[in-house]
Image (cartoon, rainbow, N blue to C red; front, side, top):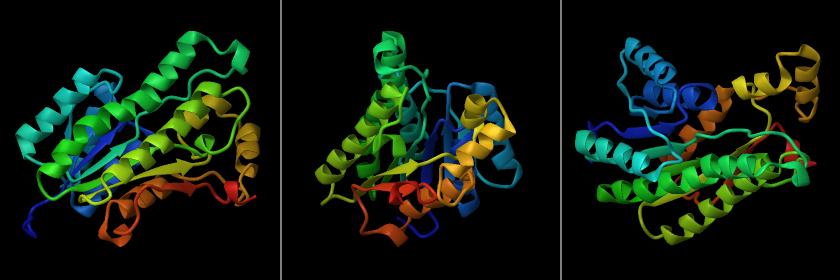
Length: 252
């Protein structure tokens, strides 16, 4: 790769929260960013915001649950840029809260379809394009809920635990090729998802903050910083890891 060739970064679930923050961080670093999401209006707005700052961004609507949609997304990136260097598979949902026996089949299937199968769909089509040129890096969105259990979130915890195992398996498969694959495991990050769960109630937000030893919520930009570090030469000997971004939560 020429030193003047810009890297291509793909971010799924890029219309809000951690995805939005990471897309903006890639762009600020000088990468060309491809944003994808089901929310076309908000995704286009994020891309426009990036372009207004003089950086390069393109929004392409795609549904990670539909493998044909993901295949088309990666084909469009290949046709337009001929390469992919970084992929942040961030798209996900929290699902509905209910004890295991009360978890509906619909909630189970939908949560795993988005959070786990969606990551598989992305990796399946991203890997050949990453290998087409100089290799690259994949970062998958897991959660501390993939490492420890949380009552009333059976589908969410199962999906995130699956992401960690999928990440480790693929990392071993590609360890001798120029592709590194890691996952990140945030604790409670102040996003729209948290605002939905807490209904913007200050007391509930305070309770969420106190769950973490640092006694505050993480910020999307802090997660973005970790993703960009994993997508850099600074982490060149790191693969197959599930990196905690949790304010000390799992240290107890």
